[in-house]
Image 1 (tube, rainbow, N blue to C red):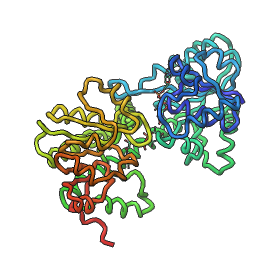
Image 2 (tube, rainbow, N blue to C red):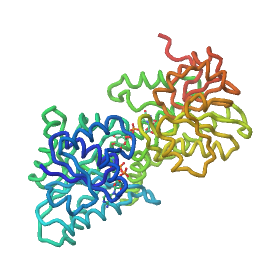
Image 3 (tube, helix red, strand yellow):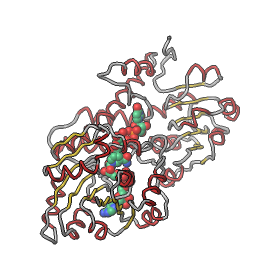
Image 4 (tube, protein in one colour):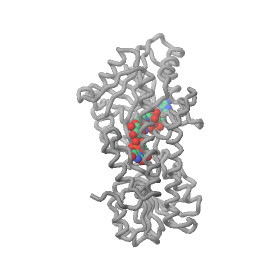
Length: 442
Ligand SMILES: NC(=O)c1ccc[n+]([C@@H]2O[C@H](COP(=O)([O-])OP(=O)(O)OC[C@H]3O[C@@H](n4cnc5c(N)ncnc54)[C@H](O)[C@@H]3O)[C@@H](O)[C@H]2O)c1
Ligand SMILES: O=c1ccn([C@@H]2O[C@H](COP(=O)(O)OP(=O)(O)O[C@H]3O[C@H](CO)[C@@H](O)[C@H](O)[C@H]3O)[C@@H](O)[C@H]2O)c(=O)[nH]1
Protein backbone atom coordinates (compact mmCIF):
# COMPACT_ATOMS: atom_id res chain seq x y z
CA UNK A 1 0.00 0.00 0.00
CA UNK A 2 1.23 3.53 -0.80
CA UNK A 3 1.15 6.02 2.05
CA UNK A 4 2.06 9.72 2.33
CA UNK A 5 3.07 11.12 5.70
CA UNK A 6 2.84 14.91 5.98
CA UNK A 7 5.22 16.44 8.54
CA UNK A 8 8.57 14.93 9.50
CA UNK A 9 8.75 15.80 13.19
CA UNK A 10 8.94 13.04 15.79
CA UNK A 11 5.57 11.60 14.92
CA UNK A 12 5.83 11.82 11.14
CA UNK A 13 9.32 10.41 10.95
CA UNK A 14 8.89 7.61 13.48
CA UNK A 15 5.52 6.50 12.13
CA UNK A 16 6.66 6.91 8.51
CA UNK A 17 9.72 4.74 9.12
CA UNK A 18 7.65 2.37 11.29
CA UNK A 19 4.98 1.84 8.63
CA UNK A 20 7.69 1.33 6.00
CA UNK A 21 9.10 -1.34 8.30
CA UNK A 22 5.62 -2.96 8.32
CA UNK A 23 6.06 -3.32 4.54
CA UNK A 24 4.23 -0.19 3.33
CA UNK A 25 5.56 2.17 0.64
CA UNK A 26 5.93 5.48 2.46
CA UNK A 27 6.79 8.94 1.19
CA UNK A 28 7.39 11.57 3.88
CA UNK A 29 6.61 15.20 3.01
CA UNK A 30 7.69 18.41 4.74
CA UNK A 31 7.61 22.10 3.82
CA UNK A 32 10.98 22.54 5.51
CA UNK A 33 13.44 22.11 2.63
CA UNK A 34 16.48 21.94 4.90
CA UNK A 35 14.92 19.06 6.82
CA UNK A 36 14.15 17.12 3.65
CA UNK A 37 17.66 17.72 2.27
CA UNK A 38 19.11 16.37 5.54
CA UNK A 39 16.78 13.37 5.53
CA UNK A 40 17.70 12.55 1.93
CA UNK A 41 21.35 12.62 3.03
CA UNK A 42 20.58 10.14 5.83
CA UNK A 43 20.69 12.73 8.63
CA UNK A 44 18.00 12.79 11.33
CA UNK A 45 17.08 16.36 12.38
CA UNK A 46 16.75 15.42 16.08
CA UNK A 47 18.13 12.80 18.45
CA UNK A 48 16.07 9.64 18.89
CA UNK A 49 17.75 6.31 19.69
CA UNK A 50 17.56 3.81 16.79
CA UNK A 51 15.76 6.14 14.36
CA UNK A 52 18.73 6.73 12.06
CA UNK A 53 19.14 2.97 11.59
CA UNK A 54 15.40 2.35 11.05
CA UNK A 55 15.22 5.13 8.45
CA UNK A 56 18.39 3.94 6.66
CA UNK A 57 17.15 0.33 6.57
CA UNK A 58 13.84 1.26 4.96
CA UNK A 59 15.33 3.80 2.53
CA UNK A 60 17.76 1.11 1.38
CA UNK A 61 14.88 -1.33 0.94
CA UNK A 62 13.18 1.23 -1.32
CA UNK A 63 10.13 1.58 0.94
CA UNK A 64 10.84 5.05 2.38
CA UNK A 65 11.54 8.34 0.61
CA UNK A 66 11.39 12.08 1.31
CA UNK A 67 10.12 15.07 -0.64
CA UNK A 68 8.85 18.64 -0.33
CA UNK A 69 6.40 18.07 -3.19
CA UNK A 70 3.05 17.29 -1.54
CA UNK A 71 1.11 17.13 -4.82
CA UNK A 72 3.49 14.58 -6.31
CA UNK A 73 3.61 12.55 -3.07
CA UNK A 74 -0.15 12.19 -2.67
CA UNK A 75 -0.72 11.33 -6.35
CA UNK A 76 0.35 7.73 -5.82
CA UNK A 77 -1.07 7.21 -2.35
CA UNK A 78 -4.33 5.84 -1.01
CA UNK A 79 -3.72 6.93 2.57
CA UNK A 80 -2.42 10.29 3.80
CA UNK A 81 -1.29 10.71 7.40
CA UNK A 82 -1.31 14.29 8.75
CA UNK A 83 1.52 14.56 11.32
CA UNK A 84 2.18 18.32 11.40
CA UNK A 85 2.60 20.28 14.63
CA UNK A 86 -0.35 21.63 16.62
CA UNK A 87 1.50 24.03 18.95
CA UNK A 88 -0.20 26.05 21.67
CA UNK A 89 -1.75 29.39 20.71
CA UNK A 90 -1.39 32.21 23.29
CA UNK A 91 -4.92 31.55 24.66
CA UNK A 92 -4.09 27.87 25.35
CA UNK A 93 -6.01 26.48 22.38
CA UNK A 94 -4.28 24.27 19.79
CA UNK A 95 -2.98 26.23 16.79
CA UNK A 96 -4.42 24.35 13.82
CA UNK A 97 -2.96 26.54 11.07
CA UNK A 98 -0.56 23.82 9.80
CA UNK A 99 -3.41 21.27 9.74
CA UNK A 100 -5.60 23.74 7.83
CA UNK A 101 -2.83 24.47 5.34
CA UNK A 102 -2.36 20.73 4.66
CA UNK A 103 -6.13 20.19 4.27
CA UNK A 104 -6.34 23.04 1.74
CA UNK A 105 -3.32 21.73 -0.20
CA UNK A 106 -4.95 18.31 -0.32
CA UNK A 107 -8.21 19.85 -1.57
CA UNK A 108 -6.19 21.41 -4.42
CA UNK A 109 -4.48 18.23 -5.51
CA UNK A 110 -6.42 15.05 -4.87
CA UNK A 111 -8.12 13.55 -7.89
CA UNK A 112 -9.26 10.16 -6.59
CA UNK A 113 -10.55 8.54 -3.38
CA UNK A 114 -8.25 9.09 -0.38
CA UNK A 115 -8.28 8.17 3.28
CA UNK A 116 -7.01 11.13 5.29
CA UNK A 117 -5.76 10.16 8.72
CA UNK A 118 -4.94 12.63 11.48
CA UNK A 119 -2.11 11.50 13.75
CA UNK A 120 -1.41 15.00 15.06
CA UNK A 121 -3.05 15.67 18.42
CA UNK A 122 -6.11 17.75 17.53
CA UNK A 123 -9.11 19.01 19.53
CA UNK A 124 -12.44 17.24 19.34
CA UNK A 125 -14.21 18.25 16.14
CA UNK A 126 -11.06 18.75 14.05
CA UNK A 127 -11.38 15.66 11.86
CA UNK A 128 -14.92 16.63 10.91
CA UNK A 129 -13.63 20.16 10.15
CA UNK A 130 -10.83 18.73 7.96
CA UNK A 131 -13.41 16.79 5.91
CA UNK A 132 -15.57 19.89 5.58
CA UNK A 133 -12.56 22.01 4.48
CA UNK A 134 -11.64 19.47 1.82
CA UNK A 135 -15.21 18.93 0.61
CA UNK A 136 -15.82 22.69 0.32
CA UNK A 137 -12.52 23.44 -1.45
CA UNK A 138 -11.78 20.36 -3.55
CA UNK A 139 -10.90 20.95 -7.21
CA UNK A 140 -12.08 17.52 -8.34
CA UNK A 141 -15.30 15.74 -7.49
CA UNK A 142 -13.76 12.98 -5.39
CA UNK A 143 -14.75 11.31 -2.13
CA UNK A 144 -12.55 11.43 0.96
CA UNK A 145 -12.92 9.64 4.27
CA UNK A 146 -11.30 10.98 7.42
CA UNK A 147 -9.90 8.90 10.26
CA UNK A 148 -8.63 9.93 13.68
CA UNK A 149 -5.63 7.79 14.66
CA UNK A 150 -3.93 9.50 17.61
CA UNK A 151 -0.32 8.61 18.37
CA UNK A 152 0.88 7.69 21.87
CA UNK A 153 4.65 7.37 21.37
CA UNK A 154 7.06 8.93 23.85
CA UNK A 155 10.24 10.72 22.85
CA UNK A 156 13.37 8.81 23.80
CA UNK A 157 11.68 5.42 23.24
CA UNK A 158 9.58 6.38 20.23
CA UNK A 159 10.38 3.37 18.05
CA UNK A 160 9.60 0.81 20.73
CA UNK A 161 6.35 2.68 21.52
CA UNK A 162 5.35 2.75 17.84
CA UNK A 163 6.24 -0.88 17.19
CA UNK A 164 4.74 -2.21 20.44
CA UNK A 165 1.97 0.19 21.47
CA UNK A 166 -0.39 -0.48 24.39
CA UNK A 167 -3.31 0.14 22.04
CA UNK A 168 -4.20 1.41 18.56
CA UNK A 169 -7.08 3.87 18.44
CA UNK A 170 -8.97 4.29 15.16
CA UNK A 171 -11.92 6.66 14.98
CA UNK A 172 -14.05 7.07 11.88
CA UNK A 173 -17.41 6.72 10.18
CA UNK A 174 -16.55 4.67 7.11
CA UNK A 175 -16.09 0.92 7.70
CA UNK A 176 -14.14 0.76 4.45
CA UNK A 177 -11.62 3.43 5.60
CA UNK A 178 -11.32 1.84 9.05
CA UNK A 179 -10.54 -1.53 7.40
CA UNK A 180 -7.78 0.10 5.30
CA UNK A 181 -6.12 1.58 8.40
CA UNK A 182 -6.44 -1.70 10.31
CA UNK A 183 -4.66 -3.35 7.40
CA UNK A 184 -1.69 -0.96 7.73
CA UNK A 185 -1.37 -1.98 11.40
CA UNK A 186 -1.77 -5.70 10.62
CA UNK A 187 1.57 -6.67 12.26
CA UNK A 188 0.32 -5.09 15.51
CA UNK A 189 -3.08 -6.77 15.20
CA UNK A 190 -1.35 -10.12 14.74
CA UNK A 191 0.75 -9.41 17.86
CA UNK A 192 -2.55 -9.08 19.80
CA UNK A 193 -2.28 -5.33 20.39
CA UNK A 194 -5.71 -4.12 21.57
CA UNK A 195 -7.52 -2.09 18.89
CA UNK A 196 -10.12 0.50 19.93
CA UNK A 197 -12.41 1.22 16.99
CA UNK A 198 -14.67 4.17 17.68
CA UNK A 199 -16.13 7.41 16.32
CA UNK A 200 -14.10 10.51 15.44
CA UNK A 201 -14.91 12.56 18.54
CA UNK A 202 -14.18 9.72 20.97
CA UNK A 203 -10.81 8.97 19.33
CA UNK A 204 -9.83 12.64 19.54
CA UNK A 205 -10.86 12.80 23.20
CA UNK A 206 -8.98 9.57 24.11
CA UNK A 207 -5.66 11.25 23.21
CA UNK A 208 -6.25 14.39 25.29
CA UNK A 209 -7.76 12.52 28.24
CA UNK A 210 -4.79 10.10 28.30
CA UNK A 211 -2.16 12.85 28.31
CA UNK A 212 -4.12 14.94 30.80
CA UNK A 213 -4.48 11.98 33.16
CA UNK A 214 -0.74 11.20 33.05
CA UNK A 215 0.05 14.88 33.68
CA UNK A 216 -2.40 14.80 36.61
CA UNK A 217 -0.55 11.83 38.11
CA UNK A 218 2.73 13.79 37.90
CA UNK A 219 1.35 16.99 39.44
CA UNK A 220 -0.32 14.92 42.15
CA UNK A 221 2.91 13.20 43.18
CA UNK A 222 4.82 16.49 42.92
CA UNK A 223 2.41 18.08 45.36
CA UNK A 224 2.62 15.07 47.70
CA UNK A 225 6.46 15.20 47.44
CA UNK A 226 6.62 18.79 48.64
CA UNK A 227 4.35 17.91 51.55
CA UNK A 228 6.58 14.89 52.31
CA UNK A 229 9.51 17.29 52.62
CA UNK A 230 7.59 19.41 55.09
CA UNK A 231 6.36 16.54 57.29
CA UNK A 232 9.35 14.19 57.08
CA UNK A 233 7.95 11.40 54.88
CA UNK A 234 9.74 9.73 51.96
CA UNK A 235 7.85 10.09 48.68
CA UNK A 236 9.73 7.24 46.98
CA UNK A 237 8.37 4.76 49.50
CA UNK A 238 4.96 6.45 49.45
CA UNK A 239 4.78 6.19 45.62
CA UNK A 240 6.05 2.61 45.65
CA UNK A 241 3.44 1.51 48.15
CA UNK A 242 0.68 3.45 46.37
CA UNK A 243 1.68 1.83 43.10
CA UNK A 244 1.34 -1.66 44.52
CA UNK A 245 -2.40 -1.09 44.40
CA UNK A 246 -3.26 -2.11 40.81
CA UNK A 247 -6.00 0.52 40.77
CA UNK A 248 -3.23 3.15 41.04
CA UNK A 249 -0.25 1.53 39.26
CA UNK A 250 3.41 2.39 39.82
CA UNK A 251 4.21 4.40 36.69
CA UNK A 252 4.30 8.19 36.28
CA UNK A 253 4.62 8.73 40.02
CA UNK A 254 8.17 10.11 39.92
CA UNK A 255 8.40 13.60 41.40
CA UNK A 256 10.64 16.12 39.64
CA UNK A 257 10.91 19.74 38.53
CA UNK A 258 7.53 19.48 36.76
CA UNK A 259 6.52 17.95 33.46
CA UNK A 260 7.69 19.47 30.18
CA UNK A 261 7.96 18.49 26.55
CA UNK A 262 5.98 19.27 23.45
CA UNK A 263 2.87 17.39 24.58
CA UNK A 264 1.76 17.42 28.23
CA UNK A 265 1.82 21.19 28.84
CA UNK A 266 0.14 22.04 25.53
CA UNK A 267 -2.38 19.20 25.60
CA UNK A 268 -3.49 19.90 29.18
CA UNK A 269 -3.94 23.57 28.24
CA UNK A 270 -5.87 22.64 25.10
CA UNK A 271 -8.23 20.31 27.00
CA UNK A 272 -8.79 22.97 29.65
CA UNK A 273 -9.54 25.41 26.81
CA UNK A 274 -12.04 22.98 25.28
CA UNK A 275 -13.73 22.78 28.69
CA UNK A 276 -14.03 26.57 28.91
CA UNK A 277 -15.27 26.77 25.33
CA UNK A 278 -18.03 24.33 26.25
CA UNK A 279 -18.94 26.17 29.44
CA UNK A 280 -17.49 23.33 31.51
CA UNK A 281 -14.31 24.54 33.28
CA UNK A 282 -11.91 21.65 33.93
CA UNK A 283 -10.97 22.47 37.53
CA UNK A 284 -8.60 19.53 37.99
CA UNK A 285 -6.63 20.46 34.86
CA UNK A 286 -6.31 24.08 35.96
CA UNK A 287 -4.81 22.80 39.23
CA UNK A 288 -2.49 20.41 37.36
CA UNK A 289 -1.05 23.38 35.44
CA UNK A 290 -0.74 25.56 38.55
CA UNK A 291 1.10 22.83 40.44
CA UNK A 292 3.39 22.26 37.44
CA UNK A 293 4.29 25.97 37.37
CA UNK A 294 4.90 25.97 41.13
CA UNK A 295 7.20 22.96 40.82
CA UNK A 296 9.74 25.09 38.92
CA UNK A 297 9.76 27.53 41.84
CA UNK A 298 9.96 24.70 44.39
CA UNK A 299 13.17 23.57 42.62
CA UNK A 300 14.69 27.08 42.66
CA UNK A 301 13.81 27.41 46.37
CA UNK A 302 15.62 24.14 47.09
CA UNK A 303 18.77 25.57 45.49
CA UNK A 304 18.47 28.69 47.64
CA UNK A 305 17.86 26.64 50.79
CA UNK A 306 20.97 24.58 50.21
CA UNK A 307 23.38 27.33 49.17
CA UNK A 308 21.87 30.59 50.44
CA UNK A 309 21.35 33.78 48.42
CA UNK A 310 22.30 33.36 44.80
CA UNK A 311 24.41 36.46 43.95
CA UNK A 312 28.04 35.33 43.80
CA UNK A 313 27.09 31.64 43.62
CA UNK A 314 27.78 29.27 40.74
CA UNK A 315 25.21 26.57 40.04
CA UNK A 316 26.16 23.50 38.00
CA UNK A 317 23.08 22.36 36.07
CA UNK A 318 23.14 18.77 34.82
CA UNK A 319 20.50 18.14 32.14
CA UNK A 320 18.72 20.61 29.85
CA UNK A 321 16.44 18.28 27.84
CA UNK A 322 12.87 17.82 29.16
CA UNK A 323 13.63 14.11 29.63
CA UNK A 324 16.55 11.76 28.90
CA UNK A 325 17.37 10.32 25.45
CA UNK A 326 16.14 13.32 23.50
CA UNK A 327 17.57 16.59 22.24
CA UNK A 328 14.14 18.22 22.67
CA UNK A 329 13.94 21.18 25.08
CA UNK A 330 10.36 22.24 24.28
CA UNK A 331 8.83 23.43 27.60
CA UNK A 332 11.75 21.81 29.43
CA UNK A 333 11.80 22.76 33.14
CA UNK A 334 15.47 23.73 32.59
CA UNK A 335 14.43 26.70 30.41
CA UNK A 336 12.53 28.29 33.27
CA UNK A 337 14.74 27.21 36.14
CA UNK A 338 18.04 28.33 34.57
CA UNK A 339 16.46 31.66 33.67
CA UNK A 340 15.23 32.17 37.25
CA UNK A 341 18.59 31.22 38.78
CA UNK A 342 20.36 33.75 36.55
CA UNK A 343 17.70 36.43 37.24
CA UNK A 344 18.37 35.96 40.97
CA UNK A 345 22.10 36.56 40.49
CA UNK A 346 23.59 33.08 40.08
CA UNK A 347 26.13 32.05 37.48
CA UNK A 348 25.13 28.86 35.66
CA UNK A 349 27.49 26.23 34.26
CA UNK A 350 25.41 23.66 32.36
CA UNK A 351 25.98 20.28 30.79
CA UNK A 352 23.68 18.08 28.73
CA UNK A 353 24.91 15.11 26.65
CA UNK A 354 22.73 16.01 23.64
CA UNK A 355 20.45 19.03 24.15
CA UNK A 356 22.95 21.92 24.46
CA UNK A 357 22.40 23.20 20.91
CA UNK A 358 18.60 23.15 21.22
CA UNK A 359 18.81 24.93 24.58
CA UNK A 360 21.05 27.63 23.09
CA UNK A 361 18.59 28.10 20.23
CA UNK A 362 15.68 28.41 22.67
CA UNK A 363 17.45 30.80 25.08
CA UNK A 364 20.24 32.53 23.15
CA UNK A 365 20.15 35.50 25.50
CA UNK A 366 21.02 33.54 28.67
CA UNK A 367 24.68 33.92 29.76
CA UNK A 368 25.15 30.21 30.47
CA UNK A 369 28.61 28.69 30.45
CA UNK A 370 28.27 25.36 28.63
CA UNK A 371 30.53 22.56 29.83
CA UNK A 372 31.79 19.58 27.86
CA UNK A 373 31.20 17.12 30.71
CA UNK A 374 29.63 17.00 34.19
CA UNK A 375 33.01 17.54 35.89
CA UNK A 376 33.69 20.77 34.01
CA UNK A 377 30.19 21.94 34.98
CA UNK A 378 30.84 21.11 38.66
CA UNK A 379 34.20 22.91 38.75
CA UNK A 380 33.99 25.74 41.30
CA UNK A 381 30.21 25.34 41.77
CA UNK A 382 28.35 25.94 45.04
CA UNK A 383 25.52 23.56 44.12
CA UNK A 384 24.98 20.75 41.62
CA UNK A 385 21.40 20.77 40.32
CA UNK A 386 20.21 17.65 38.48
CA UNK A 387 17.34 18.51 36.14
CA UNK A 388 17.31 15.55 33.70
CA UNK A 389 17.91 11.94 34.72
CA UNK A 390 20.37 11.00 31.95
CA UNK A 391 21.84 7.61 32.81
CA UNK A 392 25.40 8.95 32.76
CA UNK A 393 24.58 11.16 35.78
CA UNK A 394 23.81 8.05 37.85
CA UNK A 395 27.39 6.84 37.57
CA UNK A 396 29.45 9.97 38.21
CA UNK A 397 32.68 9.86 40.20
CA UNK A 398 31.16 11.71 43.15
CA UNK A 399 34.44 11.98 45.07
CA UNK A 400 35.89 13.80 42.08
CA UNK A 401 32.79 16.01 41.83
CA UNK A 402 33.06 16.87 45.56
CA UNK A 403 36.69 17.85 45.21
CA UNK A 404 35.97 20.05 42.20
CA UNK A 405 33.09 21.95 43.81
CA UNK A 406 33.44 25.12 45.89
CA UNK A 407 30.76 23.69 48.23
CA UNK A 408 29.67 20.03 48.18
CA UNK A 409 25.92 20.52 47.78
CA UNK A 410 23.44 18.68 45.54
CA UNK A 411 19.83 19.40 44.63
CA UNK A 412 18.70 16.18 43.00
CA UNK A 413 15.47 17.23 41.29
CA UNK A 414 15.09 13.73 39.74
CA UNK A 415 15.88 11.65 42.85
CA UNK A 416 18.61 9.66 41.11
CA UNK A 417 20.79 9.32 44.22
CA UNK A 418 20.25 7.71 47.62
CA UNK A 419 20.19 10.44 50.28
CA UNK A 420 22.01 8.35 52.90
CA UNK A 421 24.88 7.61 50.48
CA UNK A 422 25.16 11.28 49.56
CA UNK A 423 25.38 12.28 53.21
CA UNK A 424 27.98 9.62 53.85
CA UNK A 425 30.02 11.00 50.95
CA UNK A 426 29.92 14.40 52.68
CA UNK A 427 27.42 16.22 50.48
CA UNK A 428 24.71 18.57 51.66
CA UNK A 429 21.92 16.87 49.75
CA UNK A 430 18.27 17.34 49.03
CA UNK A 431 16.03 15.41 46.67
CA UNK A 432 12.34 15.91 45.91
CA UNK A 433 10.14 14.71 48.76
CA UNK A 434 12.77 12.58 50.51
CA UNK A 435 11.61 13.96 53.90
CA UNK A 436 13.86 12.92 56.77
CA UNK A 437 15.53 10.27 54.54
CA UNK A 438 14.02 7.50 56.66
CA UNK A 439 12.81 5.70 53.58
CA UNK A 440 12.17 2.01 53.43
CA UNK A 441 13.30 0.08 56.50
CA UNK A 442 13.18 -3.40 55.03
N1 LIG B 1 6.46 14.63 19.84
C1 LIG B 1 5.81 13.59 20.33
O1 LIG B 1 6.34 12.80 21.08
C2 LIG B 1 4.35 13.37 19.98
C3 LIG B 1 3.73 12.16 20.35
C4 LIG B 1 2.39 11.96 20.03
C5 LIG B 1 1.67 12.95 19.36
N2 LIG B 1 2.30 14.12 19.02
C6 LIG B 1 1.53 15.11 18.25
O2 LIG B 1 1.89 14.94 16.87
C7 LIG B 1 1.95 16.21 16.21
C8 LIG B 1 3.33 16.43 15.62
O3 LIG B 1 4.26 16.50 16.68
P1 LIG B 1 5.83 16.56 16.41
O4 LIG B 1 6.50 16.67 17.73
O5 LIG B 1 6.20 15.47 15.48
O6 LIG B 1 5.88 17.97 15.64
P2 LIG B 1 7.09 18.86 15.10
O7 LIG B 1 6.70 20.25 15.35
O8 LIG B 1 8.38 18.32 15.62
O9 LIG B 1 7.09 18.56 13.54
C9 LIG B 1 6.08 18.97 12.68
C10 LIG B 1 6.62 18.98 11.25
O10 LIG B 1 5.56 19.35 10.37
C11 LIG B 1 6.10 20.17 9.35
N3 LIG B 1 5.03 20.97 8.71
C12 LIG B 1 4.37 22.04 9.22
N4 LIG B 1 3.47 22.49 8.32
C13 LIG B 1 3.55 21.67 7.25
C14 LIG B 1 2.88 21.62 5.99
N5 LIG B 1 1.91 22.48 5.69
N6 LIG B 1 3.23 20.65 5.11
C15 LIG B 1 4.20 19.77 5.42
N7 LIG B 1 4.87 19.77 6.58
C16 LIG B 1 4.55 20.71 7.48
C17 LIG B 1 7.14 21.02 10.07
O11 LIG B 1 8.06 21.58 9.17
C18 LIG B 1 7.75 19.98 11.02
O12 LIG B 1 8.84 19.32 10.42
C19 LIG B 1 1.52 17.23 17.26
O13 LIG B 1 0.14 17.42 17.15
C20 LIG B 1 1.85 16.55 18.57
O14 LIG B 1 1.03 17.00 19.63
C21 LIG B 1 3.62 14.34 19.30
O1 LIG C 1 6.80 10.03 36.62
C1 LIG C 1 7.05 10.92 35.80
C2 LIG C 1 6.94 10.73 34.40
C3 LIG C 1 7.22 11.79 33.55
N1 LIG C 1 7.61 13.00 34.05
C4 LIG C 1 7.86 14.13 33.12
O2 LIG C 1 6.77 14.25 32.22
C5 LIG C 1 7.22 14.77 30.97
C6 LIG C 1 6.72 13.90 29.82
O3 LIG C 1 7.36 12.65 29.87
P1 LIG C 1 6.97 11.44 28.89
O4 LIG C 1 5.53 11.19 28.97
O5 LIG C 1 7.86 10.31 29.18
O6 LIG C 1 7.41 12.05 27.47
P2 LIG C 1 6.68 12.53 26.13
O7 LIG C 1 7.59 12.16 25.03
O8 LIG C 1 6.28 13.96 26.29
O9 LIG C 1 5.37 11.61 25.97
C7 LIG C 1 4.06 12.01 26.37
O10 LIG C 1 3.45 12.82 25.38
C8 LIG C 1 3.35 12.19 24.08
C9 LIG C 1 2.80 13.23 23.12
O11 LIG C 1 1.43 13.36 23.18
C10 LIG C 1 2.46 10.96 24.20
O12 LIG C 1 2.34 10.34 22.93
C11 LIG C 1 3.06 10.00 25.23
O13 LIG C 1 2.20 8.88 25.39
C12 LIG C 1 3.21 10.75 26.56
O14 LIG C 1 3.83 9.90 27.53
C13 LIG C 1 8.75 14.85 31.08
O15 LIG C 1 9.12 16.17 31.38
C14 LIG C 1 9.08 13.93 32.24
O16 LIG C 1 10.26 14.28 32.92
C15 LIG C 1 7.74 13.19 35.42
O17 LIG C 1 8.08 14.27 35.89
N2 LIG C 1 7.44 12.13 36.26
